[in-house]
Length: 202
Image 1: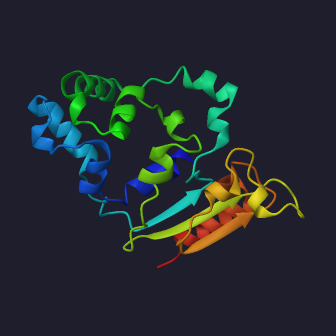
Image 2: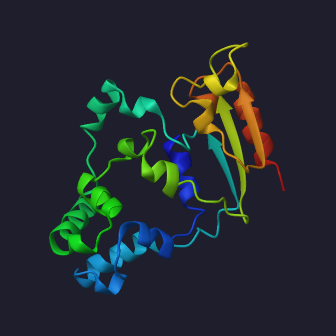
C-alpha cells in the first residue's frame, strides 16, 4: 500500500523539473541557513537507490484512494503529524522566501500534507510526483486484490481500500489479480505463490 509508493519513489530520481514545479528561483537564491538549504536540496535532487533491482507492488494506490478522504480517515488523519523537521522547514520557507515559491509550491508548503493526505485521489504527490516513468533498470510487478465477484468488471472493482484502476500500473513486468481478495492480498494463498514466483526469478 503506502509502502509500495515509497518503494517506487526509491527507484526514481529528482532534479530540475521537480524543483521548477515548486520554486521559481535557483536553490542558491533561497534565503535559508546552510543546513536547511541542504535538507531542501536532498528532498528535491536525489538518485535511485542502486541496490533495488526489483519491486513488487501489493495493493498499491498509485493514483490514490477515495478512502483517504472519507470522514473516518479524516479523523485518523487529524492524529497524524507532519515530521517536525519538515514542518519547520516549510514554515521557514514560507516566512523567509515565499516569493520564491510557485503557486503549487506555496500550496504544498502551507498545507503540510500528511502521508494520509498524499493518498487522496487527486493529490499532486501521488498522481504526478510518484507517477514518473518507471526506471528501466528496475523490474516491477503488481499484485492486486479484487473483492467483488464476476461479472463486475475490473474497472469498477477493488480490494475494499484501493480500486483496481489505482492499483494497476502500466509498464510492469507482470500483473497478478487475485479474486476474491481484500486489501491483504499478499497474505492470500495465490498472493504468496505469486510473490514466491517473483522472488525465484533470476
